[in-house]
Image (cartoon, rainbow, N blue to C red):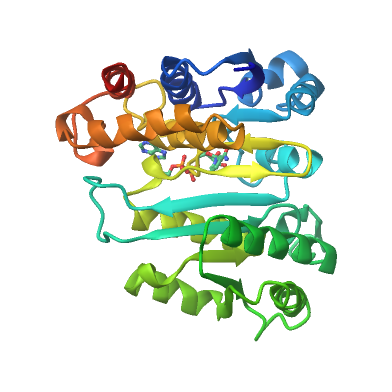
Length: 337
Ligand code: NAD
């Protein structure tokens, strides 16, 4: 089997711990990956004067696939978000976040199985903001037909590929008639080419209530950037928390896999972070690369470790540390053969 080079960005805060756990678990499957480790985030600011040095972007462009730890974004000041810049400069237009309840992970729900498809390049994240005098500020929400049709097509194609039945377009077009109206209209147009898949739409506030009351009714959700960001965390809460929610940023020329969670500075360096979201993001990456058997080893090993609560991190009701949890998954992989 031919080997591939993957860029690994450990990230900030708990990033180094969870990405090293993920690398260890993926390596245990024997997958022929060469890791090109590059730093981005806080550690780079002093060294390079920017949290996202050019050579990091070059590495991802060259390898076309990256596994990325979370990167801290200072609130209300400092550099622009590395995460947003990375997605925009690499054209990673689709943020894909599968939400599936895992057996034995404490959660209020049992049958959640949906995918969030979030538009990743525009909306209020386009970074068009300015002050109006001293006491007012404006952020401009940008929605284009091109980007809306592109994310709509991605969502319907994903639904078709995965044998899913329904796509829900999420919006607030009753209030933002022009911008969200265009998002809705563009994706409805795309839906016409997929008659076998049910297309419905929901206003984002109603969607949040429905998600909490009956998440099982949803299959694929397609959302503009901001609602997608917020609903992703809500979705993580439905399946047991941020510690178990994986994700991917996909574009025409590359893909960056990363957990939904952030750098969790409160627990950084304490060996407390749950590495599962990052490991599951790694499994998604293996599938993207066509290493399906290796991904299946990772998923089977996770399922077996989840059966023993004592082997899990605190957030899942266990008492193991990040490293011990990852070591148990590695051991379970060895036991598969
Ligand atoms: P966060 O996801 O880091 O943390 C939210 C809560 O979840 C905290 O209580 C944290 O301890 C807990 N948590 C998160 N991941 C966990 C894990 N793996 N195991 C156990 N508990 C976990 O969100 P935040 O506090 O809003 O953000 C912290 C920083 O991360 C900010 O600078 C933010 O901008 C950044 N961030 C980065 C990304 C990314 O790189 N893609 C995503 C979200 C937030």
